[in-house]
Image (cartoon, rainbow, N blue to C red; front, side, top):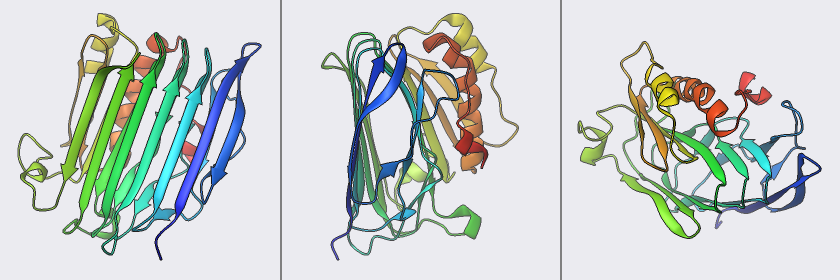
Length: 273
């Protein structure tokens, strides 16, 4: 067995003030349900489905999202992505995003659960034109916390690269191993098994919005915070609970969305199930 090769390509366009899915191409176990419009004509909500429910060693997932000029979409997943023990074969997911002028993509997948023994590489590459806006988060859990499983073997790599008009504006590359000091050091995960980041590339964030974000708090031992560069807003979470990480990011999203999308945050229905 060499693993699954799965590929999903989605192309969104704006037509008469409404975002529609103009092209869907897929192979292997990746697909979407029909687009939903809980907020009106924009954005189009899309749900990426991976029927096997988990990713085994040797599996390779490719997601390609293209948004034409003025198209707007929110893409999420129905549940956590489970990364199983690899048995010596690496599993991978590559997300490639191309956005044209005035487009908006919100890429909000649910958490990644990394099983003991998993060898995983996740890469996300975002290409933005002019004033296209991107908002995306990722949440990861090392080990199955609900089962009391600790992550003692394996490898987990995350790469995020964002360019605007071919100019690099954000890049992260992190490699986690069970014996790495990054998992325990005060400059790393501080012994917490759950970590996440939330990035918005919509230009300079107003001081008033940044202040709202700083006032979002959690009643727990988790470590979290926000920061802003001239072109990128980012938030971080490290703690014990993936649900808490998403709760934190959702609260920030409520503060941020009126700024970068001129609309209030509307939760996808699948998050309530």
